[in-house]
Length: 323
Ligand code: NAD
Ligand code: UDP
Image (cartoon, rainbow, N blue to C red; front, side, top):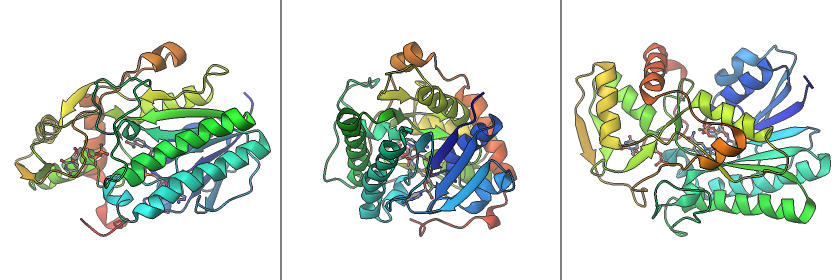
C-alpha cells in the first residue's frame, strides 16, 4: 500500500472522526484540521500519540499551506440548529473553505473531495433524487446559508476542475447517523434517541409526515473512500445515502420501540423550508463505485442507541445555545 498524506478538514466532527480512524487503520498519514465549532478534542483523543496523526486547530475560512496527496473537505456545521447560529459564517465556511482547499489542491496536485449534501436538492419536486435533478432551493430562506453555500462550493469545485484541471470528487451526502454523534448535535436521530432514553416527550416538528433516508456512518465512510479512490475521471457529483425512506413519526415510533421507552410524541411548529421528502437515487454510486449501504436502520439504530445509553453527557458542551 502507498502511504498517502491525507488532510481531513472538519476531521474532529462526526463523520470526520470516523474517516480519520479508517484512514489511520489503513496506515495513511492523516492531518485532521478543525476549529472545533461543532466538535471537541475528545472526539479525536484516541488518535493523539499515533505517529501518523496530526491535529491542527485552524479555521478553514483562512488559507493554510500544507503538502498533501488527498483532501477530504468536511469542515462545515451540518446540523440546522448549529448552521443557523451564524449563517454568514456558515456560507463563508462553505465558500471560502472550498476556495482554500481548491487552491491548496491546485498548488500541490492533490485530489480533493467535497462533502456536499442532499440539501442541494432543496425541497425536491421529484423522489428519489438523481444527481441530474437541479433542485428546488429557496435562495433567501433560512436554510439557504447551508444549501446555497454548498451549491456554490460545488460550482467552485467544477470551475477549478474545468479551468485548472484540479482533481476533484464531489459527493452528495444524505442524512447520516451513528455512534460518535455529538449528543448536542441537534439533528433528529440524536435528539429522538436522547429524549427516548430519558423518557421525555419526543419533539416532532410539524405533523411529522416529512421523510428522510438515514445512512449508517460506516456505510457512508466506505462510500467517501470509494469515491476518493474511484475510477479515473469519475468526478461526480454522486449521491451517497441509504434509500430506505421513512417519515419522522415513523422514526420516532421506531426509536420508542427499540429503546422500550414510555416517551410520547409532542408536535411543535414546522420549521421554515423543511424539505418534505428526501430519498437518494443511488444508481450511479452502485454502477460507478460498486457501493451501496449494507446496514439496516434497525441494526444502525441499535448500535447508536447503545452508544448514547453509555455516554457521559457531562463531558459535552453545547456547541451553540440551546434552541
Ligand atoms: P459535524 O458538525 O459533526 O462536523 C463538522 C466539523 O467541521 C466539526 O468538527 C466542526 O467543528 C468543523 N468545522 C465547522 N466549521 C469549520 C471551520 N470554519 N473551519 C474548520 N472546521 C470547521 O458534521 P458532520 O455530520 O460530521 O458533517 C461533515 C460534513 O458532511 C459537513 O460538510 C456536512 O455538511 C456534510 N454532510 C453531512 C451529513 C450528515 O448527515 N452527517 C449530510 C450531508 C452532508
Ligand atoms: N426534526 C424533528 N425533531 C427534532 C429535530 C429534527 O422533528 O428534534 C425534524 C426536522 O424538522 C426535519 C427532520 O427531522 O424534518 C430532519 O432534521 P435534521 O435537523 O436532522 O436534518 P435535516 O435533514 O432537516 O437537515
